[in-house]
Amino acid sequence: MSEMTQADLPGSTSDAGAGSSPVVGRRIVTRQRLIGLTVIAILLSIWLIATVGGFVRPLFVPGPADLARGFEQWGPSMPDDIWQTVGLRIVPGFILGGLVGLVVGILMAISQTFRAVADPIVEVVRPLPPLALIPLLILWFGIGIGTHVVMIAFGTFIVMVVTAYEAVRNVPPIYLQAAATLGASRAQTFRRVIVPAIVPDIFGGVRVAVAASFGYAVAAELMGAQGGVGWFMVTSRRYLLTENIVAALIVIVVMAFLADQLVRWVNRRLTNWKPRA
Image 1 (cartoon, rainbow, N blue to C red):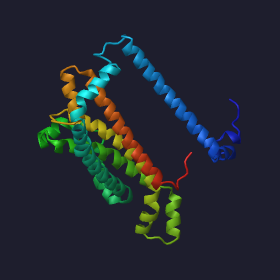
Image 2: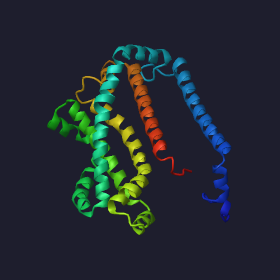
Image 3: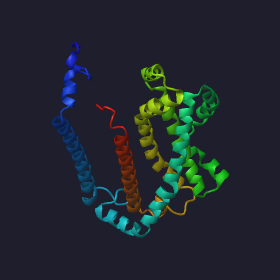
Image 4: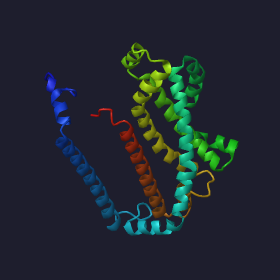
């Protein structure tokens, strides 16, 4: 193996100079976008050839005409189903679980007493898959929307409590030492040092929790829901309406993508001070 030179290191001067050039940065972004669009075009071409050419039965993979019919059939009830999934289940569950997980994770990281009390509980419930709790949640809360919100909140809580705990624990000690040297109190250190330092890592957990919330919501709607995107998929499955199922999957992907883009935009706005590779 040849010896690695200084110029090969990630933090070398040559890399810094190249990364600092706006022209080079735009070229890299443009190239990545072209590669992504090419991959999407190839996948769409394969889908069109397989369906329009008759190589795959519409029962298994619907073609463009079948998919358009699925969206047309779902059209009248689509806004209400999306509202029930996102507005009545995902948003409340995500906010509840995210806030509780964030607070618990931070308190576990900064307080030894609180960690001694909460850590055994978190370690017991953390390995539990939220979907495995469905029978127990139905027994406790019934099959209403409240049960769905609790399941989404539980899944979000697990992600955020671990993210917040690790984010605080990974704050560089030199930041805390500098704050102590300057005479900052514990409250000032938390507000001016710890919170800004953990925000980038917290948003990483938020992105994971947002994506997981859509999966939990669809799974929750499989247990007795009377509306929502997941309920529409279950109803379509009973009548072998594959085009409706695929239409619902496309809507879920688009909603999750838009939610992720929103989180990324907020992250960039709040952490524009943080250098990125």
